[in-house]
Image 1 (tube, rainbow, N blue to C red):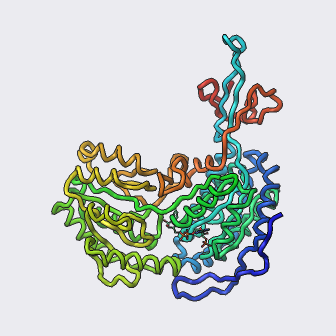
Image 2 (cartoon, rainbow, N blue to C red; image 1 turned 45 degrees about the vertical axis):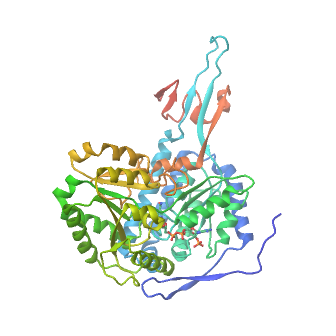
Image 3 (cartoon, protein in one colour; image 1 turned 180 degrees about the vertical axis):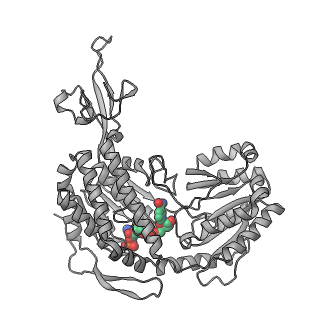
Length: 514
Ligand code: NAP
């Protein structure tokens, strides 16, 4: 029995970032007893949910998609009110969230995602007969999900973490983001409708509100929870990672955190497309008021006259963009504080407007020496700004790339000749980032089978995974092996006759037939 602290219940409201006013509805932070109840319900629903077929889960996902659409403008308006993001942006995000659900429904229906591997027995092998060994991926158990403030739909209650955990066969408890609790409540109600329509066990999905870190801590520490999916700040992700590691039975935390997503402009590209590239970078830096985890917060180029022309055009293009309010008061304060710190540093050149105490878009430049002296120069500032690192030559660019921490993305703008000359840079960047882009910009993450939205620490707490795309499912599974099992006791995916007609790796060949 756990001791609970149920005497105080904290109440809170969301704020409209456009006018700073509190919104109408009041929300109650979950009590410890409510968190415990949700965790226990998740654990008992796991017994049946883990056995649901791909078809049953696909129907469940389609029902969630339908219910989300049925929320109509109510959802769009509430999300827009709580985030300050325009309705069109929220509509697009809803489209992405629904497409993500349907992509996973297809994956589940097809079924081969379980990675069935079969090594058949050989009784004639000497000196010892070879056993029949079969493995497949199975769900870990209940998963706690924390969404970020900047994607109120696609990285929130029905976002990538929830969908990939449910797809794996894991019940989910979402810790609602306190910046958009009304949006979270609407989406949670849609998922609950779908749970009932698709006849899923009721504890398979739950959501708890919280404005203090306490609720998240109770969730992560509860013995029923078997993994955590997190999207948000470095501070939040690392805190939850540490908490999970301190449990008597540590559990994996897949925290997707911030990144500066360096963009390297190579000499040939700068020579050929200086203005176009400057405008492209400015658009990417200021997209969504710079509040993307893939925001290009850093660019690197050789300090030549073409490089300086690019920087000047970038400054003009960035200054031409009107920046809207940032998502929360806290994000606004953090942004202004970070900009003021850069503005006060004599080793940094602030190219844009000099008033650093209001939210504006900014371009800075500096050199590698300053960058190596102050960590804050190469760390994410969440908002519409970018830091140029000016290097003297190719060698210094390569050395700087070598010094970079883990990133979600790394981008190169280059001609064919540049790519030949900077091959070493490409090799280095593969060791630094989860996704490499040539002649594009990092903002915008496709939800596909091959996508990697991850990267070495500190971009994430586990570089072996992605939080976007169907491969995200493997964060919440583990391989289970069956040795010399009678056919009738094997899961359908591993039975001799392959009743689900899935692709399996049999004696090292991918086949549908045994
Ligand atoms: P955040 O402040 O870290 O919040 C994310 C969630 O974590 C919230 O539910 C928050 O709840 C909880 N949380 C934060 N610190 C915690 C702690 N110490 N203990 C327990 N719970 C904690 O992040 P955000 O401001 O919403 O999002 C912006 C950040 O997310 C940016 O850095 C951005 O780059 C990153 N992001 C990353 C990705 C990606 O895929 N890698 C995608 C989108 C955004 P409380 O507020 O109650 O603490």
